[in-house]
Length: 124
Image 1 (spheres, rainbow, N blue to C red):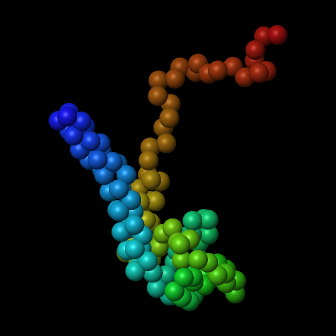
Image 2: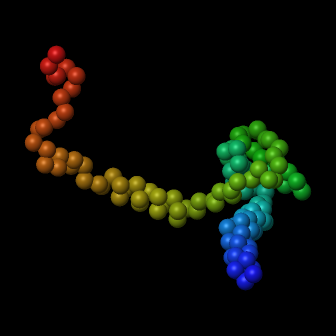
Image 3: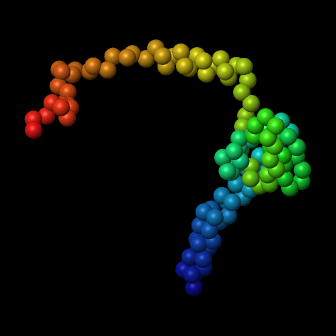
């Protein structure tokens, strides 16, 4: 009798940690995402469309995807709010690109001229 009770408690704990807790976290993250949303926010939809929020309503929003092209989408279609890059972030990216350009271009590491023959070099 005790082993059945212990087994039941163990299964309930596993169910909680593998099913319920991750769902609660996802629901909380989605709610935080919705509160961070405002007019002028850059967003990504679940369909992969990037745009700028023009108007917010209770259940839906207007999203400008190009100059003069506005579409109405459901709020549940929101996948992510794109953070606005500041001037400092752009300067850091430029520095990273300059660092990548200074990588040593010498790729001849101990090759003695042994290269794979091309189709024209192979005997018939």
